[in-house]
Image (cartoon, rainbow, N blue to C red; front, side, top):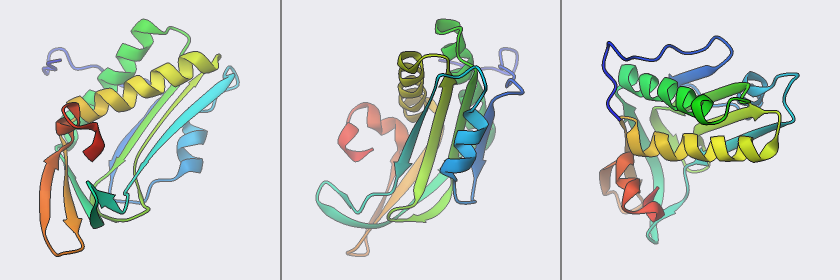
Length: 161
C-alpha cells in the first residue's frame, strides 16, 4: 500500500488514533470504541513480554515516524469500512519511548453491531499496522545487549512480534 499526500485518507470524527509517550489505557480505548449501536467491542492489547526467543527482555523502546504512521492508521480504518460497512468505531493507539515488561505498547479496538465483524476487523487492524506502519522497536536484553527491529519484520517471523 502506498499512501501519498494526494491520496491521504482523513480520519472520521468518531474514530480515535494516537501515537503517544503516555501509558495506554484499556478503559479509554474501550470508551472511544463504544457506541449505542454496538453489539460488540473487541480490544487487542499488545504488551512487552519478558523474553524473545528465550532471551530475557528487560524493556522495549519504540520509535515511529508519526505523520506516516497515523496515515496508515487512518487507511486501516478506511479499509475496514470498505469491507465491513457495519463498523461503528475504530481506535488505534501506539506508544513510543521506553516501555518495561508488562506495559501496553499498542491498543486496537473496533466496535460493531456483531462480534464476528468486530473480531475480523480488529485482527485486520493489528496485522496491517504491524506490517505497514513505520514503527520500530529496540529490544533491550538482560545481558545488556540490544537490537532494533522493524515491526514489519513480523511479516517473516511472528514469534518476535
